[in-house]
Amino acid sequence: MTYSSNEFDAKEVVGNDRKHVWHHLSQHKPYEETDPMVIVKGEGMRVWDAKGNEYLDAVSGAVWTVNVGYGRTEIADAVRDQLVTLNYFAQTAGNVPAAQFAEKLIEKMPGMSRVYYSNSGSEANEKVFKMVRQIAEKNYGGKKHKVLFRERDYHGTTITALSATGQFERKNQYGPFTPGFVEVPHCCEYRAQEGADLENYGVWAADQIEKVILAEGPDTVGCLCLEPITAGGGVIEPPQGYWDRVQEICKKYNVLLHIDEVVCGLGRTGKWFGYQHYGIKPDMVTMAKGVASGYAAISCTVTTEAVFDLFKEPEDGRMDYFRDISTFGGCTAGPAAALVNMQIIEDENLLDNVVEQGEYLRGRLNQLMEKYDVIGDVRGKGLFAGFELVKDRVTKEPVDESVSVQIGAHCMANGVIVGRTNRSFKEFNNTMCLSPALIATRADIDKIVDALDNALADVAPNS
Ligand code: PLP
Image 1 (cartoon, rainbow, N blue to C red):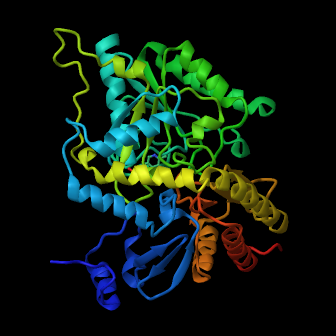
Image 2 (image 1 turned 90 degrees about the vertical axis):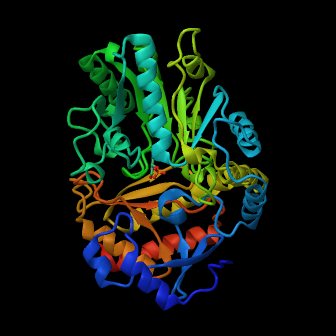
Image 3 (image 1 turned 90 degrees about the horizontal axis):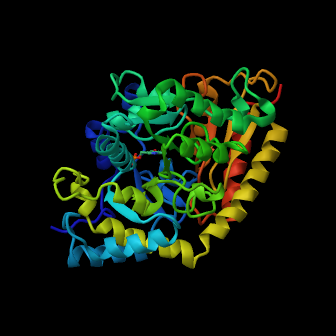
């Protein structure tokens, strides 16, 4: 059999999709009532649906994934070559692209040393949680096993990754959760907690983590798990002073620092990794989406040599090594795609482009804020941006969800796909999100912001 996704009957495909495919994160009723969107082709920054409509994708595949853009034949060619040479062998043994990509990756991550392959962000994070528990068992009589996570951060879809997630919409109705996961307060300056020290909010917010550690008992806390910039929780960059204090606290209480780079990794913020903006020295880093830009499924859990050493087997310790396997962590397509993906970022100077276009994007969003009272705050770094919609700039009361839904629909009708937070934490479902591919040009940014401008003029004009 030969298969080509270029040959299809659009009506039949849409019909089959509606009848049989269970879409992710989608309400059932409207889905059955409306025509599902079926994406059939992508090229550069653009995608086309089955009806032939063209869209500028301002969110890299809806969820911050297609960092180097669509239609990269050089990645497809490398994957094809690798598949016909060796498609798979479990990671119990090595393979060529896995070894080569690990070396290139570690080059970009001074201080880090070991790469553990799996195939989704959730799974990469689960590896961290398992490592923390095993380290606790081996060294602290099982006691130092708790993982702290932050309100508004997301770490994945499995029950344990959700247990480490601070978003209401993702967690609601999926309990009971895995024990040993404890939430610390968010660090969104725009939404600073009552009683917070606003002069020194970064340090204040980090100090709240120390309070949780003390309340739980430092001898029970093994790891602090944080996004470098909160993504789906509203594009929140921790304020000045936060990371220095976080690292002091981790050192003081011997708590491992895990940074979840599933969204920020591989250039999204203008450096290879988000944590590299803040002088952070993590013990563990996870990454997924942009590692191969969606050309293959791959995720990595990267650790320091010191963490790796904790799993060295003593002579009588048959159970002491990391007893974990991910079947599809042995697929060679992932690292083959990741190698070319990384090469593209280097050859095309995409990190510089992200810095330049990111500044331009934020400048234009700030202009929108001057124009529309409904925008309360513009945030982000590199090609990773968000803005909050409020009923009133003084009270900061969030708009109803319908406003962000209408803005998204308006942009879509005008050929631009934008994102928004999705009832992630009950009241703050009011942030529009942008994460265009790292190849975005000034003209692309203009088209995205112009579409938002038109949408805001219709949906939320100043009164
Ligand atoms: N971590 C972060 C920060 C994410 O945003 C996501 C997904 O959006 C995940 C982890 C989970 O990744 P995956 O959907 O590949 O399991």
